[in-house]
View: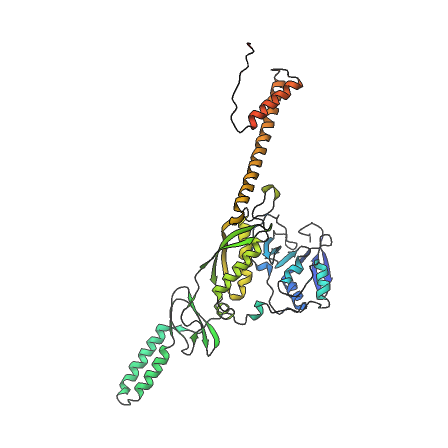
Length: 426
């Protein structure tokens, strides 16, 4: 196997009852998800790890790398402030040196020292010296998961109810006490009818216990004892748009900027959305704000193209992909699926907007002047070479200097040159 980063041969490293592919030159590690889970168990984690190999990939400027196992091109995923390479076919992830501890810092809230991959495994997995968690992760509280509720086509039950009523009707004249009994039973059965519109759902409980979610448009019959967890409304499964307005955030350089985003999301797991958080709409709003601040602080507002550095203004696709991944990670506990996240407004804060505009204008003027000077020098050089090559005129060094001076002044001037003809008649 070859190292995806430096191309060196990977060696099999057996450490702390773990087997990983290790590059001794750059310190990177190729780890498959079952091994990651085993490391999590050694660290005493109870929450389920997020598998990077199953995360949505993002587009970045970094060069693609080959999978050590199958040699296919790996995809980039953003996770907890780092960008790692993953191969979905091999269910593996490549961690550059120092990225493994950053991955596990998401699940452990103790004070973990940032160190290289090999030292992290040796120090924390061997003797289980990991600091005790200060509080539980949200994933630990995920007690409920969506399951289908028992339901029958409502028209079938309604038809049976009518047939029973017709069959009992002749006996009503013989035994009148049957009528109130039949009415009570009928009212009880009618209490189980539910009507759902397209893209709606009901989370049902019986005596406080979650028994399932009713999905699908139409006329349904469920257990009459079941009640909706949201009695006044149904759960919308439609794609919804979140717009939290503009926020003032400092970029990587400390400049205050105004940023606005829209997040398109939908409820994927109704049980998590209703029972794991108090209000899933407020929850995704708060998590979107938090993710936006984390992402914006990692980038400058703008960066020169020749620097090759990503910026908020120049790499909107990369920023949107990271923003979506960050929000999705935060709202997974609430059973929410983030469809898309995009920046809709990006500008300097009003208090520095004028100064930054002047700075941008100055930079633009400098770039323009640089281009003009480079072009003028090229034109002067071409003119001198042509005059010399074609033997049109022989110029000494002083005459060349005067010619160069006149041409540069003419070509670099902001105003058009006014030709003056010297005839030497006087």
